[in-house]
Length: 449
Image 1 (cartoon, rainbow, N blue to C red):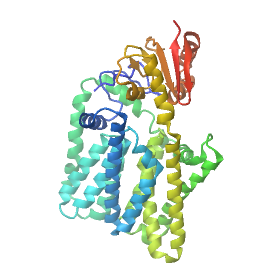
Image 2: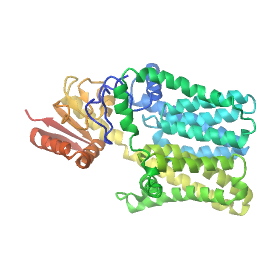
Image 3: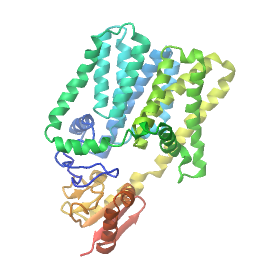
């Protein structure tokens, strides 16, 4: 299970070493790769295929949360509102349309909670085993999904079933994790040094928030949330209107904590506590402020918001028109963000033009440095190498260099972390290459004969 397009002597933009990546892939958990491989066998290898897999996980997760909210509230209207708001959410839709593992991990974590709640009144031992199995699958897809599943299962087990928990349930819950860990260990033992280099680099520095919790909390809010919701330095002033979405989440959490009858209602208080604890986990234990990780926390805030709106609708009839207006405004803001991505249409306006250009100028035998995403348009090529170092460490050279905006950002990051490599790349492009293509999203250089 090697990643043949990545250069083993290179690193990622956050300096994760890729030693042995062409033979074994250790820097990410394995289950997503196995699921994707099976999906390709069934439906073929294409960009639409990999996105369809994420869409499928997203649809299953919606069904899971419908059941969880229905089970907690006892009312289909609360469950329907939660699913409606989730289905409009820009973060949720974006993650359900890319090829990362986050939506799969979130879906498996959601399924763990839904299955536990479904089975707990019939066969409690089965509920523990099934929930733990799905939690283990979430963990071995992405650790953040596993944390969500474990927090959720622990919260519901304590809230609903603490009087039924016995010592025998502890090893029962641990069996799936041990089995999956043993299976992965067989793969790890094939190249333990590569495992330490890759996964050790990916995990390094993620817990630094524990040393400075208040600074980490501030950084989490600014970097992961405010930037995404319109307060980034590069955002237009009009984008700050999306801060109303954050304000709605904050109001729901604060209202839920303030209202005693809400927070003490079984299930409501559990979901509220899970959302807060999970937010703190990302602030203190996850220093990598990847925007993709919002898909783990934002849906929980959305569910709490749906429960709070439903609660106020039933207990404060005089505010119903205000609540209806707020829900419509929130959904409208989310759909406006979705529409913006649709109208930007980077696939047709940026990606396909550079693919057409490269098809006309290159062949499968052309040595090329470029982002691995090019394989969707060019097909799998042995001579396409994804190397943020552009050969400055490996000594390899390329006839064509393709830089996406993300690669250019990574190169600029090297100016801070490894200035000698940045200087090497800058001089190489200036002295030995000439620009052939310079359009929004991509640049292409050709080596001067």
